[in-house]
Image 1 (cartoon, one colour):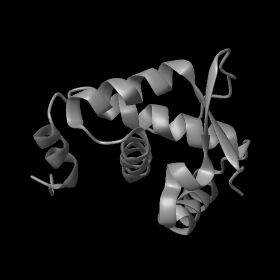
Image 2 (spheres, helix red, strand yellow):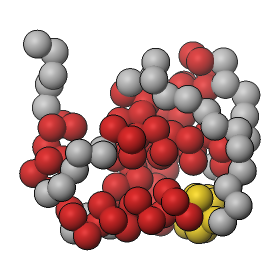
Image 3 (cartoon, helix red, strand yellow):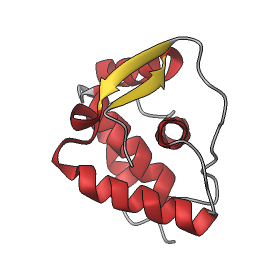
Length: 121
């Protein structure tokens, strides 16, 4: 399912690099976190079919690392449950963008901890 090279919009890449300066986490780790956040809250995850004019290419193995199989399974499940039938590039790009939106408040590495705590009050 996953293409060898993932095309992110320049805006998305810039946001990942900005977060890198705040958290000292690499863009690929931040993108994985963004995808996870989007998949955790699937009722707000949307697929944006528009193609970016300016792109930044990241290799699949860099983006997903050794968790590629797990991410592919999670994304396939999301597509099945939400009846999404779109290009894998579009799905991955949209999930990253959706998750990055949830990460907008991050200013320090400690801010990332809120993503991994149980918020079922």
